[in-house]
Length: 266
Image (cartoon, rainbow, N blue to C red; front, top):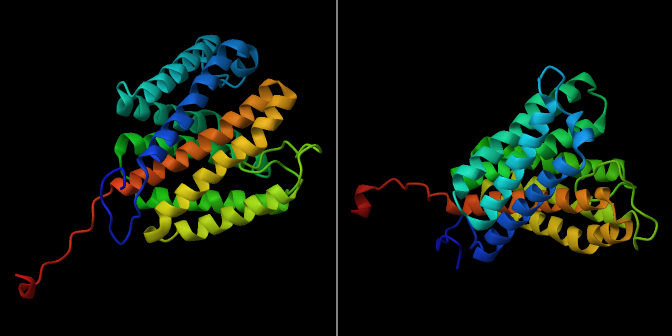
């Protein structure tokens, strides 16, 4: 049975448990990142645009906002309001920090990846609040999967999932095979999600892939490194997977298209 109890030709049953897992996996990293604003205050303060006065205040303010948003999503208290506010905050990160940096250095691949990552972090809570997935958002998410998939082949030595700058540690069995396999699955997911009929299944599968990488790939790295970087990669990948599951669940809520009634049907 789906979370909405609806089964039609365009949407497969969406397990209610996956919707909860997606929400929790998105919320917990918010709390982690919020706490880091009080631990890594100086480095995060430097990310605040120079023209924005009281940079230390905004650093603490964002930390409180992330923790509050994460707790709201976990407890479901004022969940839709919190989801909408978190989506706006993530979009502001892109508009005020990452987009200007990306346009200033358009050849820097990592900035494009972070920009796309932050936009997907805005998409998850946005559809949780709105409970719909606009066509443009579905296409955008498919393009992000395509971009990330290609990056896995261009930089196979980098960790899978969100292809940032960290290279695969030598103690991880399989090495670059993780990147190639993830890249293939992301490319398949991108192509499949271009078709609305199969988009929900695609986002659900890729979201579960990200959570699989968290358990089998990133948790061992975090436990081995025992530092903030390892924790952040776990949180990033978990949040990405959670966002994809939230989008898949929102697709399952969309109403069936209205069928034209012919006289012969009356």
